[in-house]
Amino acid sequence: MEGAMGHSFVYARRPQRVYWETTRACDLACRHCRAEAVPDPDPAELTTAEGRRLLERVAAFGEPLPHVVLTGGDPLKRKDLFELIAAARELGLRVSVAPSATPLLTPEALRQLHAAGIDAISLSLDGSTAGDHDAIRGIPGTYERTLEAVRIACETGLPFQVNTLVCAETVDDLPAIHDLVVAVGAARWSLFFLVTVGRGQVLQPVSAARAEALLGWVAGLSGPPGRGHLVVTTTEAPQLRRVVLERRRHADGTAPELAPAAGGSAHAAAGIRDGNGIVFISHTGEIYPSGFLQISTGNVRRDDVVEIYRTATLFQELRDPGGFGGRCGRCEYRWVCGGSRARAFSTSGDPLAEDPLCVYDPARPDGSGPGRA
Image 1 (tube, rainbow, N blue to C red):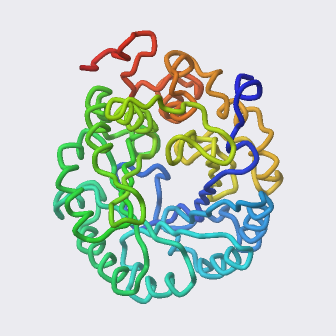
Image 2: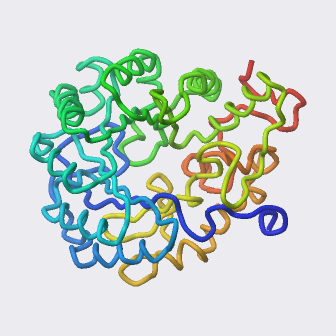
């Protein structure tokens, strides 16, 4: 493989983040829900004992330990949530939680999360007004409940990030949502570019040309972490890294470093994508490259997640962008970007195909492609 010959696989031994879908139970009915959540827990979801064993295996990845994100559904629907957080912390694992804005997200629950020693929570704002947000979330009152959770988080000193869905229905509202995210004091704004899986199939993605323009806007928003700037990131749109590097090159003439090396990279999160730096465990223990790329490579009830991540054929293929198809495989930014493997799979059935959201064409001297100005 190209990476084995010329470059180190930064995330070949361990992921940066492990997402565990602790449950699919949730009391919301979000129009874009990847998990197609339902109100009641699945009897087949991992038990407390199985969850503790999973966390022990995550710790076995070794240093630097992965960051565990407890997601769902709604993790607060699990009665053993705080027991699992305590088990993870005892193992030295950093933990973040992605609760839903339901009546379970009480001030007391937020204070308990803070006392449990988690790094942060994530909250969702998919509209700058109650009408727009609640229309996406499917339940009236979620906007106000989210803002109340933000208030309590700020009051207790619990860091939080805001997640926002990017699709045709939300894209025009993004500047106003950005202003709201800044106003409420979020540490990070994460833009989730729609992949049409789960209930997300009822929504429309943005066009490649619109995504390119949007990423150019996003690249100008985020400042250095820890200096009072809002950090803006994308999920399933790693093309942001190319856009940032292009802007840097045009600004100062510096040739970007395009091949991540062990121990560092040219851009924060460079190279992270589905299956490379990320692994996802479903509520029933299935091991996926990400929550949006649900091709099972094993199950933690019978397989070792460490071994699967390091040696499964699909994970190894996803870590070698030289083997990607179309423009993604030819692109000089393939090591820092690599495209959304989940979107490639959802649109073509091949996780190694090119990402149709991108307009960049490496075959053209100016990189222009269809729809790119």
